[in-house]
Length: 369
Image 1: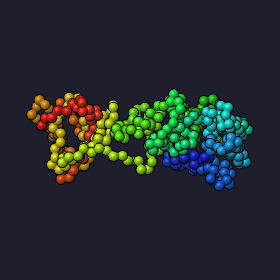
Image 2: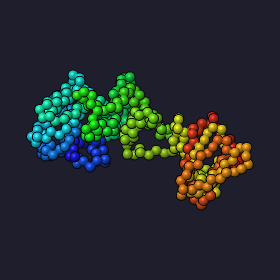
Image 3: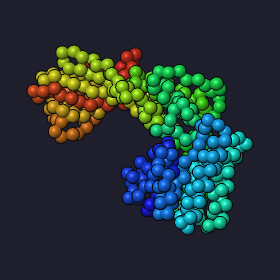
Image 4: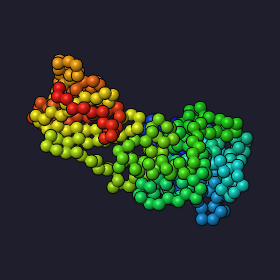
């Protein structure tokens, strides 16, 4: 298919085009304010589907609302009619189309124009009234509080919240794009005359800021947000996309001695802790046991041996491990255990434990294997 996307350099346009180019073989006809105007005519002649995402939401004068949201829509439809092209057309409207303000009225005028066009030509039209959309590539300090908060908190800049109890209806950009791809395939989510994204998150403004601040603090705490919560997962992905280029990495505290090093990477309240252990050649670490704490060891570089012994047995069990053959070794409770480097180079082991280390309740008891 030949798919015309107006507003192609905008927030939704960029995300939609990226998805279509990555997952389909459709030809994308990109049109934005910087595109040669003469191309619109040829695009409207050959388009098989139109995503009309272009619009104005931050003009210098109120008159520009109607000019951008109604005027350009009229120009687009006239070009389609000129070529008798009755392909389906989707328009990006707003929930504010139901309100009496210059922006909402201009969006409603665009909707009405599209309905009249459908009545006249028989073309299928899909009107989407989006609430607040958030996600990567949304411009901060423009018309998205989420984008502005992400941008500022990632740069240690202040954020201003007049009323933290205000709730926002939010849709995530990936959910928007998924719905638009459904629409392209004729499987749109219709609710009467209006189409909609099926997943909406209703969130307090104060809770958004608190979550973003916890994401910033998570680097120092080595914590991971609760990815089981759909909104938290989406907001965290969004936040990371606003990191400045010099903040993609962050340091970890390495506990170093003559034996090697031990470095915690991730701590979670419900999924345990992940660490990296480096053992020098000939070094054995461990020789302790646990009542309830359990671990998984994965040697990713070097060669070594993991030894176990039940507290009430003299039998020593050995597992020879190597980065050449990836395998996870479970460390059972009630067994004293150690791990020794048998090679001539450093041995690197990824270690997971079912609970983050608590020095007040370590559940770790020294005993030679």
